[in-house]
Amino acid sequence: MKKGWISIHRELTEHWLWEDKPFSNGQAFIDMLLECNHKSKEVRIGNEIVYCNRGESIKSLDTWAKRWGWNKSRVRRFLKLLEKANTIETKKARNTTYLSICNYDNYQGNQNENETKVKRIGNKPETNLTPNNNDNNDNNGSSSDPPQLQIVKLFAIWGRASDNGEKAKCENLLKQFGWEKVWNAFHRASEMGKEKKNLAYVKGILTNPDRGGGRFDKSIGN
Image (tube, rainbow, N blue to C red; front, side, top):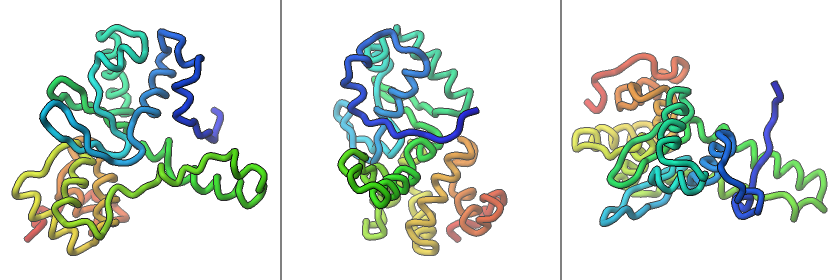
């Protein structure tokens, strides 16, 4: 199995080669990676504003079908296949589909930035030819954000909003452990699967980092 990776610029989707349809399964997955957000942003769906996080996309099945030259049934089967392989997670929303790439940073993470810096140091003439992917590594949030916004961004990682009880508990975690650790713990819980997307598991990660949150603490927030 070949190792290593390459960075792919989003302008590839504007190349004439990308207009050849229908897409293969592999090409469709690459297109999903290119279309997902590299940083979080708000998205309008009808009369609602939703938060779309890094590594996520909000598009209808019809939109994906048009991009790939498929019918909607094939898109639906392909997404279910990727879900079974733990490659993506999806959630239905009104008139659209919420899609999240599992382990997105493995495809677009800090390694990009590190290799770019090495190329700049070792070969200055290549500086203008090497893409600067620093914007791909933006931290989706800041310790300077108000707690309410931090909580919104944290639960957006899981593709949902917090309930009233979770808000208070999450704010306690932020006060106790700080933004960066809680942010990383939310991502770690997300990677472990849907059943781990809860604050008890997050606190387990924070209090037992070597065990990956394997122990649940039901006294969270108390």
